[in-house]
Amino acid sequence: MRYELQRPGLSLFAAALIVAAAAPVADAASRKTGASRPPLATETAFRCRDAEGRAHLAQSIPEPCLEQDVEVLDASGRVVRVIPGRQALERAAEQQASEEAAKRAAQRDKVLLATYLSVADIERLRDQRIGLLEQQSHVTRQYIANLREREARLMTDVQRFRPYSDKPRAPPLPDHVAEDIVNTVNGLQVYEQQLAKNTVERDRLREDFDSDITRFKELQGIR
Image (cartoon, rainbow, N blue to C red; front, side, top):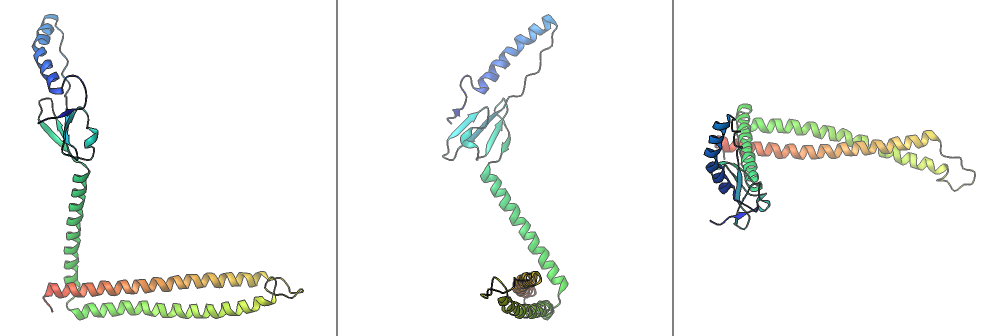
């Protein structure tokens, strides 16, 4: 196999052989002088294949393989561990997400069977929850209608004041009237947002309950 060595000079393993050959001489000298030989540092190398399948070997992670799996070698050339690349990490994340989704689905089935005895139970709770939302929406619509009537009256009244009136002697718009208009408009915005929120929540509840009914039938073998 052909490797691309990323640094000039002796290869890592050739250097290791030279050090190993010199070790007995160093030991003999140490015995004569009485000095102790310091331990050799652990040497490592990194080996990988880039996106095009070319092999690389270096004393640091080769740049072409930053997103690939990288093998970490010791001084003897043995693989001591593997550094996962981006693709491996993405596969692991996808597998974990799939496993967690399966656990959530199993837990949902367990709760579904423990909570309801029949399809009618699910439908009854669905109707109650949706009914409450519809009642809230009805009240909100009434508030909106009242505020729109008030807004219309206010907009008629302001025609008597500057700058809405063309009469040269028209009085300026009173502060309390301007404040009343602002409060009415703000109130309309709040209730309209609440009405839209209730509508979205009602549709979501209906979808969730329909899904629960379908799954409950599957688990119970009901057609």
